Length: 126
Image: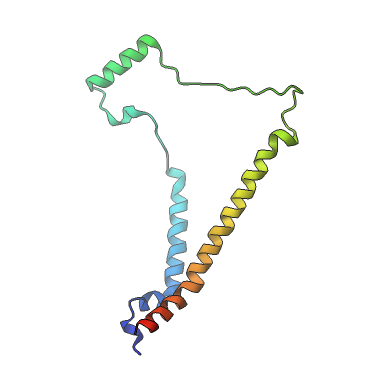
């Protein structure tokens, strides 16, 4: 049986190189995330001479644009740092841990069990 005819042969043969390249690529992308920024201002899409943008700015100058909202929480006992008010944080922490466990399990399954499964499926095909 010729393994070189298998379409997954390069993936199996160079699996450690592919894993290392994937990890390196992930680290490189993570290093650049500090430069990522989101600009929610729609003005970046228009030139300064755009008539609609000028009309919008004139309207905002006339009627004052204010998008701020403040929410204040006060407990009757004046102590919000108790078990009842902070209990939601534990639920979020637990869900985060479960998510990490699921991702690690999925990656281990992909790297350890998928290649033998593909080889077995290819053998059955031939």
